[in-house]
Image (tube, rainbow, N blue to C red):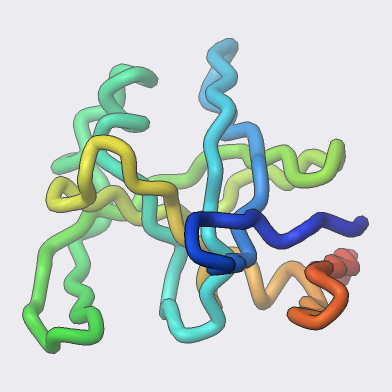
Length: 132
């Protein structure tokens, strides 16, 4: 499956793609950054709120970003539809400190272990090939 980089102001391009996040009968459309430097998938706690998930009942973890500041997050398992294909029980960490309009992040565990990912900035293209 192929996606185009998303264009932002001043010629900035980012590998941001649309996905669907699914829990029970509810589907949310969500934009996510494909981030090879992220250890895990990280979504805003607001997504959990929409699904009625108490994030604190998930597996507790910690992450540290570029600033080195450690933050708590909670992992749960959700279904994701990426490029029309359904992936069940994908591990997602919910982080309270994400901004209201921030996009989610797809990282090493839960994304790069599911897909072979090819970035081509010059062609403004991202290619994903499922491992399964």
